[in-house]
Image (cartoon, rainbow, N blue to C red; front, side, top):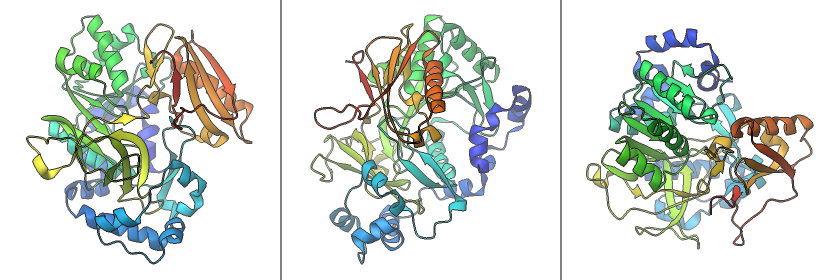
Length: 447
């Protein structure tokens, strides 16, 4: 495990008596993220996205077996040539030719492996550069600064499971106060809010569904949330109901962004507009219709397709994300023509609510397993017909073991609560819609 991954995942496990003083001592702002981060942030809007696109495509044709076989001898010199000559790929295509997507002579010592979130069947295994965090965080922080954030501490309510006797953990480097979204209840919400006040935290970073549930519980108890300056909502689409409650009833600003594990596209809104500003220097973003034609017009819905600018270890080019949006027919009054703009993102992250026995919900995104268990299964799908009951459909492969079953039972029981009924169901295939699309959650409660 490299240092960046250790800081992100292991450092918060240190005892609070040690991390609290470290948090107070961390007044270094961007310096704690390293030289690479500072370099990226300094030149974040420099360069020509079209040139970056051509460079990565031509590199891939020369150095990546998959692209070399398909496009040998081809040289791309413009976006028009790119659109005309390069075909789309998707998760199934990458998984079927996984070894061929590895660049020749890739320095695996400077890479990490990970998976996509796993809410759309069998997740994709990725090879990523170690500096992926520096790249993503630089663009993310750039947009957060639009809202006045300047390396301030954040309360985090996402996919963390905390030990039973710990109400929160602290990441002193990333300046995060981490809470347990799976434990959320009225008393725990009150405790979380009190902890935020103690540490002077004014920024809440959460899944939209987790933020909504937490703030609803606070509101029902007449707790003061007026000190919260901003809700940073990521990894799920923000529903109209969530946005209305947070912005109109609680008068808390929202920053919502779109991104994914493949790190191909990033877009987020600013304080002056709810439209998603596409970060053109992060990766190349396209919208395509069902016929595979590139969309240029506003309001025409299409699938988001991304191309990496930074991953030369396993470059994904014209990768269909399974998420959908449309270009806005207006622009931000402040940023104008500097950006292209997306309306809200929909797709595989929608219809993701799973109901606990007490009527509260957890997010399908929060059930992302991420880890070696994915190497032992060939598919996963959830089904729910009754609150507090969850069926986990699994396609086992030859390496699946009894330990994996115990892990899955424990993981989902912990997420759903002790009173929930978890059923592991082994299947030969997952359920698809008549049009061939996959739904990660088959639920009669979300209709």
